[in-house]
Length: 409
Image: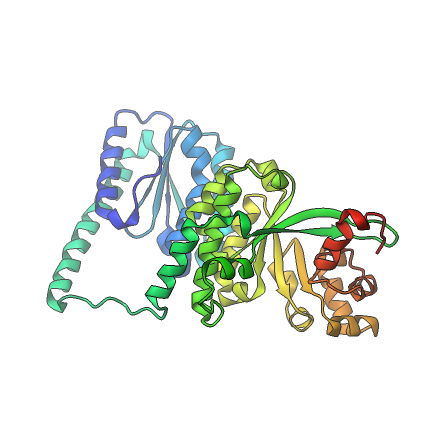
């Protein structure tokens, strides 16, 4: 089991104390791991990241009579019985990879000794009980101090919101009740070699913003406010993930990709979707993340990218232009695929042998580049000049239609 939520810190620590007391008569084979999550940087302790960190210990919890408790200071205590040492080490390795950029992890050493304290309850039950009792007492004291401070300050004012609540509520309510069937689009990414028909590699599944606007919000300019649009796409992410989780769409039985916000990877919908997939299926799923979203919070991106790696998904860096391609160190983002937007400007540079463009594509590896928004035959010349063989766009869609089955690029 994974015990309560941080919002109920007092109840959680009381439950932990009771749990440890009851284990006093059944300590044989039982271990506890005290993970000092409180030592991480603040962004690493965000609730959504802690939820993902807890996933590392699901094999211990489900397979070895385990439990996980979260303390008020964000520390975690994980219990298990007669656990396979390799399962424990794999869980700690998972955690280390998630937080590899955090100073608390890099300072903890290869085995995380400075970050994870291990208890053999057969010999250290008393020490662990003292720890959890101290945590419970600290929570009580903090609760009393908080109430006293609030009494002195008087009622607090609610934080203002930059978005119009009425507009936001209208959009979200409409999306929550909408049938996504008429808004979901699928577009293939194809491998195209000279003289050969396009070979689909995977399908991108996405929501048509034009269809959504026409059906749900014809009177609202959803692009006028960046933060409104960001919130809208995050809400759409959750609906699309739930849609995919129904598994009743035969077109999604093979490889597919979904374009998500970075923050959506911590949503309950995505975590539920993830739990339903076995490792072999996850290997066929590509998660596309937009460059602009990544750059808005690079620390969050690194955390969730490592999460995707640990869960066996492939990661695609989406939304590069010919300008951002030469400015960005793509190697540091460590993407499995990189989508570059085709444009007449990119074509011109590629055809005249622009050294910056050629070097940037080579640094990515042309075999991992997808040329997107291909709506002109010149895109094939661009790709050929750069060594690219993966394409996506309306032109590719046309080539896959029955009437064009024998056409060659």
